[in-house]
Length: 93
Image 1 (spheres, rainbow, N blue to C red):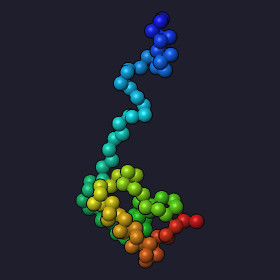
Image 2: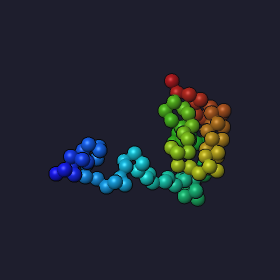
Image 3: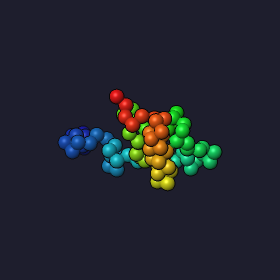
Image 4: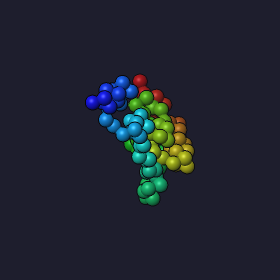
């Protein structure tokens, strides 16, 4: 009984001492371009590029797309080329 009161005072309730929900390990994303060898990134394909931009038209970062550094550079180049030839808009209103 005294242990439960002490635990409540310390802000813990019958959990392991190692458990901390803030620092839960997230599963690492696998690069879709590395995983699928047949996947070709094309700057003329707007539907394909929309997966890599958000609703405002900004390019999503690596942590959101799950792409490796090499393929994130390819994604960035393809999105910029698609914007330049007006396949995708620079920004959404």
